[in-house]
Length: 173
Image (cartoon, rainbow, N blue to C red):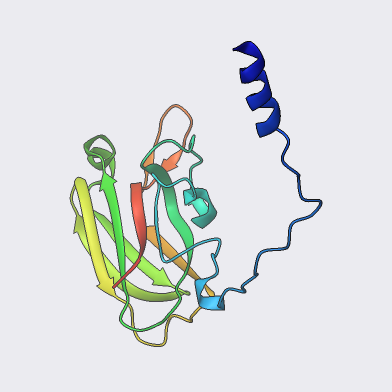
């Protein structure tokens, strides 16, 4: 019995191994399907969120779903087409900081052009959206968005200038 089992195992392991394998067919991707470093929308819960940050957003551990900003948080985006976009942002003005600042005004700049102003924002979570004027965006080119809050909270301990808690931002259809 053992000899028969040994013979079966020996015969099954004696298959010839090819010396080479042919290269599989190669295809080139179309430019519009190639991945880009940044896209049209970011959320701090995403692993690539740091790639969107240009300035005035405090560093995080990478595991949080929001980050504190300073007075002029700046982000970069890339859109693949330019028609019918709106800019959307979700953020919070905590009650604790709002007690010092009072109502806040937010201004949104896309490529250095003011596209929107939201005045007298109360404490709490906000999700705002504004249409982006035609011709302001260019396909496959970095778009810089700067958010400006008119008043910041100044922390007593370290004099940090805190603007808002930013969750996500970007261009939506």
